[in-house]
Image (cartoon, rainbow, N blue to C red; front, side, top):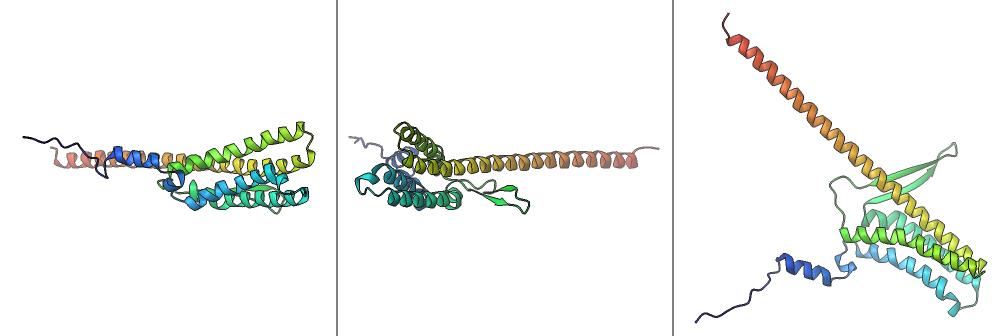
Length: 213
């Protein structure tokens, strides 16, 4: 009698790997879970302070100071650490001697990949943060809470600055990669044509040497 044994998925089976990835959370999938944690932590802390601060204290000045400091730390972290680790991008702005601003971009080399989950979460958070604060600004304005509106304006400005900086940095990276690809393609075609012409000339010269007359 032959016994039936159900097929078992090996650890290397693609179906098993996909199922395991679906069961993992974003921090387990991430290549830089600490950077991803702080990307979300400071933003969540600033929102919590703004929305729930009144439940703990009536001192608006204290809430304002702590909230703005949290926003500033979040801005610095995203600009200098989170973007570099999660998507391989970094930007900053320098003021020249003549008073003009100069954008400077830093990006990973072509061929160096990034974690797809990290990249997706980074850009979702980057785009979503100004939207959330903008909605809170509308609520504060129509609620006539103008002192709270000041916190929201600072949050919108800082989050929008990071968004614009990374948009420009990403655009600069893609342009640089396209230029490298175009240069490589042109160099390849030039080398191929040079080799073709050299072979043609060499073949012609040899043919004449061995031809009659």
